[in-house]
Length: 72
Image (cartoon, rainbow, N blue to C red):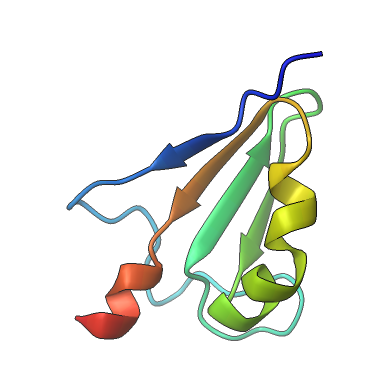
């Protein structure tokens, strides 16, 4: 299997202040989409740090990482 992880870098943001981490309810800064089953997960920066490597290791995952919002 080929790992198809995609990291999206862009100036237009996808996530809004209303998007919340599926783990703790804090503001979501990362969205992972598993193409094999179509599921989306939203992550705060803290939980992405904890679980991001495991998510990125999966095949067919698309990642929208907007953590740069923290520095804006």
